[in-house]
Length: 335
Length: 143
Image (cartoon, rainbow over all chains, first blue to last red):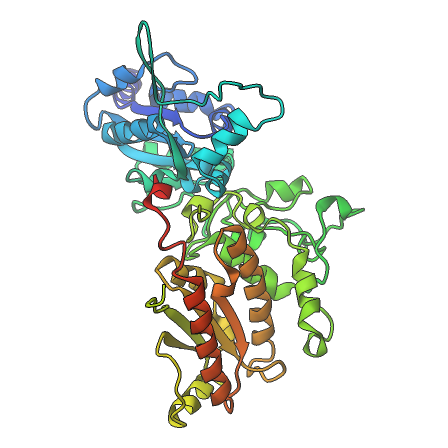
């Protein structure tokens, strides 16, 4: 009994200090932490949360006052798109022993990363000026600082470009997914608590592609018509690509156990790049072009091939939904 | 932009186009020296990522050349490349890069002349287009 108590005291002392932060994200990753259900009770026993803006009231200045490396692990979700997020990323990097890039936005820019198809000016024009439901006669757009009679008011500076966390600070581990599935979160926390961590820079997810975990039957693929999901009636119990629907499975890292396919939806690629892939979109363009084809292509006019490929709409939105900022050409060229 | 010399990366397939380029050389045909040739076993070996990487690192144009339809040493490599590059060009135009900077040509081992004229034509086109806009885009876009 005494021994148990001592052991308990020992673990109490060793409680890990954990910080969680959100940058350019939807907040889903914050909820994903709660998706680990009853395992949360074990986590609470093993860790002390020292910073988590969504749940506990600790100010930035309290974090600034912490000692260097006083946080054991920081789970950082969201991409970097303004100066506040960049400041917090750098601050938390300095204060944390381990920086874990949590969720697709932080790992590879995620859906906010698609803003790299525009720049700050275009975004402000759409949001504040040209929006049909907005009346803005004075053409007011956010400015980093404004002088009022009480003094100067400041808000964060909005950047022209969205970046992934590792384009701003050094990252130790990556936990991909939109949001990361609970079993990967549990494995990651277990590995951190027990100290069984892989080499720095590892992605804490399987090395395989989503197809490997997908339940649908797969056979020889050859498609000549691309369909949208609503055109499938009924949805057959076989590979979406074989049914003509673009599924990012072959170019996406597994770990999700094919959750979207369980719900009869194709993969959109939130797991991010496969190991050794240079560019998720390029991998899928290559894969999709291989299986697209028309009968007797040898004798056919090149125009038939054009018509076939014309069916692929919104190339960036389809193939780079979560990875535009970390792709080889990480943004649209702005004239 | 009259003194602009475009930088071209050329992926040439081992069985047809590289031999075609060789023939152009042994026949002493004249063509501009702007293309850096990379021999690949098949044009189907050219991953779209290689082309994006070349553009990222400053290439003004990328030429991919393979066997004529039906002549591919591996049956269907050139057809796949044709489709891949068409899809890649759609991507490039969405990203604000002229799709004409990527060119796919069928050049056989006996077509030294065609090889020389393709390279000459491509260099002229790229001279008119100017430098790769991604590589030379303003630093503003990286903040």
